[in-house]
Length: 157
Length: 163
Image: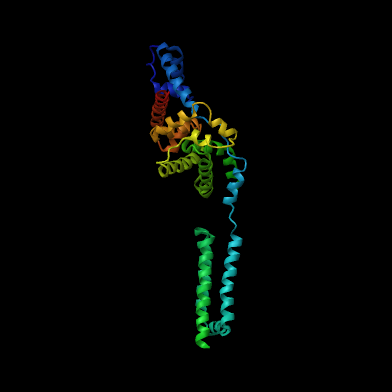
């Protein structure tokens, strides 16, 4: 027992926890009466803390529920957005058939590109903000379109 | 990706759940935190070093969520045994949690400073090694050892006072 100093509580704790593998320390602990007394006290502490263990398990449907939240189903969202977008153009044709013809014949193609850009931006946005936001925005667009075209029809007779 | 997640849930799901249960004292909250842990893990799988065990990484996420939960529910006392006692049809898990001394244990745990509580829980509930606890809490090995020892003393003292 003279070759090594007596161990402190933290080192004894590490030996009890199986975290200290220095043979000389464990050997000293096994043979030193003073350290044995300390070991008993530390072992009591470890035993008390072991009471924190719980045997509770997750419900069997946990993984299934998790996958339901993980699996993204972009198709219905994209489809719905596409339908709403189509509705915008369709409503334009019905409310003012000459409007779309004029639109294309005049050659304002960059506006078409802009609309498609916005459409795809909204799809990307929906991935980040959720489908509800893109549906709300597109529904608002449809409503605004219908309102404007209705006004135009009234004005043009 | 999903196979990796499934493996993680199978290996660490219950441990993460038990940890959350010890923090919140509420089964539904614990399940929510566990689910959120794996959702975040799935979202950030690219940040996970697959050459290492997933446990410490998952406990790091779960620990952050538990700390957030504690911060948001600071005024609500966590009394696991009381909450569960209100249940009309306790399941096997609830019966276990109503075991003798559970209420005292939860109260003692909740009265401990968080820095000691989290080390104790990672060791005894998460069953992590000292090195893994160090990684999870960004602590030096000596800090882990000291906090664990002081935490154990504190827990025993609090339980003794509660008797």
